[in-house]
Amino acid sequence: MSTTQVVNPRLSSIVVGKFGENQMVKGWHEREVDGRSGIPYRASGGESVFYLKHPPLATKLYLLLSAPVGLRSTPLDGRIVIDKLKYQLPLAVDGWVLRTFPIECAKQAIRIKLMISDPVVPDTVLHNGDARALGWFLSAVWQE
Image 1 (cartoon, rainbow, N blue to C red):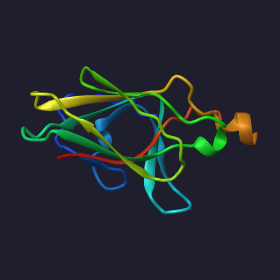
Image 2 (image 1 turned 90 degrees about the vertical axis):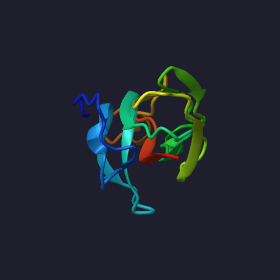
Image 3 (image 1 turned 135 degrees about the vertical axis):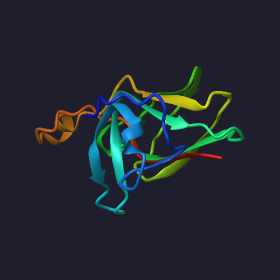
């Protein structure tokens, strides 16, 4: 997982496999590709952080994400914190979905943290030796 710190991000969006991955600074697993759709993504851990440059007129944050809910009997649930504002982020499907959150920030850069208290560990279900704690799968994030 990446641990590099970025405090002054240069980009206001991230597209995994294209640009902005250096702004994913804490708790992210290496890039993978969804075998069903070919969409590149990075899995979050129990607590993952990224930064975005914040355009002055942007009021919404968009996330294209999925989750390993096929490996558990309950939805993946947690929170997203955009600077200091907290929102629930439930996900009960393992297909790709778009989630939108309001941005109420006057700063030039925003910090986004994804938190999940009960991440998925593939080895507990598949017995495949994959002991990573997996949260949401993030493919893209942008602001408008």
